[in-house]
Length: 380
Ligand code: T4K
Image (cartoon, rainbow, N blue to C red; front, side):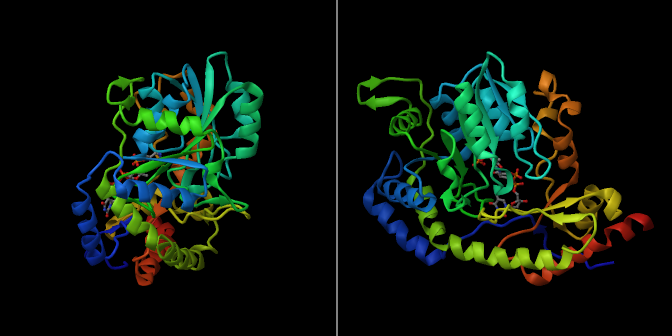
């Protein structure tokens, strides 16, 4: 049996900037006497991220979930919103927090994003929008979704939590739909400790988003809408600026690690490393393997268990489907029979450890465990 790692190997580790550089820049924060509410770090960081994402307007937030709640509020969505169940809890919860009924649409079996062919039949007189997820940084079918939305008068929100600096034929992914949300959580390649942002083309929408994230305060004496506190603070904004400086290097290191996984596992029948289509830049957020148990001879769960025995913590992102949570299971569109592609994907995907400092030797051991999983299953 392959050795057990002494220290746990996690699915990811956060990217840390040089500590001396961080502490020396902290002096700027101390000198400014600003810790939140749009101080100098926030102003500089907002501009830097806007450039990095190549979008007309951008608003920073304290985390991606609050940003997405505000995105839905800012477009005044209500009634029903058509969305994917193959995602992190936040995507669906954001609708519930806005008193909106999630309407679950199956996913495309290839891209694992919302199936644009299934959206139209779910539209009712109560539908106000579409909430897609660029899951693992794989873009939704933005053209078709945009066309459906235009035709039916619907708004489009994209959860781009995994898609920092993804581009479709050179166009930043934050330029599609009415609003897109990016997460800057520490488990993301690019992060600000916690944080996130919304991107949009419409300057009026940017103004409304900025009001909504600051309690709806227009000025000292006027509060014009029921806003929330979604503000990013100065320490987050400083961390974000320093991580942004090293994000390209991290992405380059991850490319090498992806190559190694591909080299070790690419030729195994029944196993596939998921990648983006031609013309799309890979955000390198996750290394996702898809397992066909019939062909491979071991299931995703068998592999997960074998890795756990070696102290390797792969993750089943995204199992279970959000439509299977107790709080959504009762919904008419949550029936598993209506979501066959999503049900299958949730059983077959596994996110393997993937971060720049992951030694290639560790990747090799992980791959050995994966390769041996069918034999280990038979022996058990
Ligand atoms: N939409 C989508 C599609 C999302 O995936 C997410 C978040 C959101 C919306 C919401 O965005 P935020 O509000 O979070 O900005 C993690 C992240 O917490 C979450 O941000 C992310 N998606 C999700 C896919 O992954 P968990 O519960 O799996 O995290 P956790 O604590 O188990 O961390 C995973 C591993 O990372 C740990 O085993 C060890 C390592 N780790 C983690 C942290 C936080 C570290 O080494 N150091 C750390 O500081 O959700």
